[in-house]
Length: 110
Image (cartoon, rainbow, N blue to C red; front, side, top):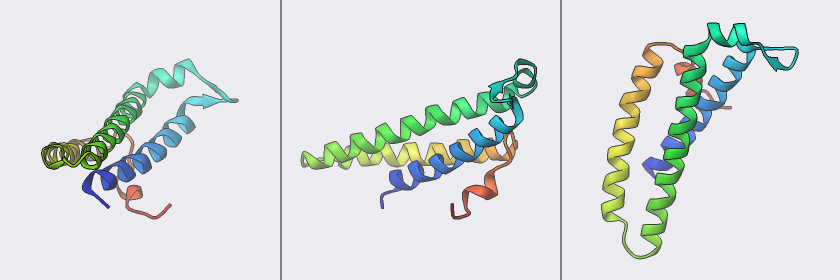
């Protein structure tokens, strides 16, 4: 599995855990409660950020795969590795702040 694939898998797990934890904090009787969402703005923003990063990782993975299938991919792989490194740094900051305390859960098997 490529580095980009590992990142996609990790972000998918992180996003799923974060989304459910925030949902548990802001949903009442099946609907988002505005006052609870207001109190959990930072956590909700973090989930939106993760959704954006997840899609970026998926698109990067697909871009590298397409380039490789066309007989290239070396340049794209270098860019993807830079993305992986930057993502890891960002996620360390994200989990260090414990906006949604999930760093340890990501490493557990689903």
